[in-house]
Length: 119
Image (cartoon, rainbow, N blue to C red):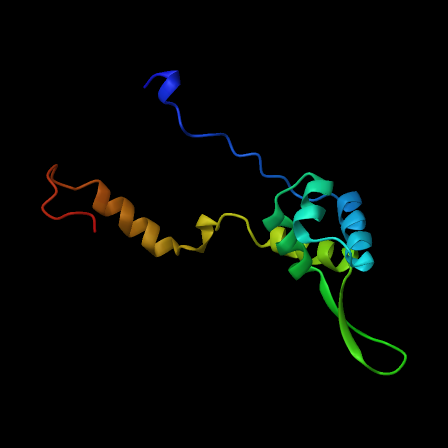
């Protein structure tokens, strides 16, 4: 494949910093910005802003006991950190020792030829 036919691009995904979340909270409180304008101001994708606003949306109660939803940066950061903590690769220790012992016996046949597949 030549360089002229190269069509894929490197991805440049970024996570929001705490400073960006604070700016996003101020823009959301102002109410005059669209999500696209917020994204342009922060230098991230519009879908990142959309997900962050949804992630950090919190139900609030005003003085007249009316509920409203508002983006709070601290709440968005907390949910983000919880999701990151749960996004690790699954551990191989969850398989039982009996399964691993049986697997090693099946992979190495006793007489040299394996009659059945490992499955």
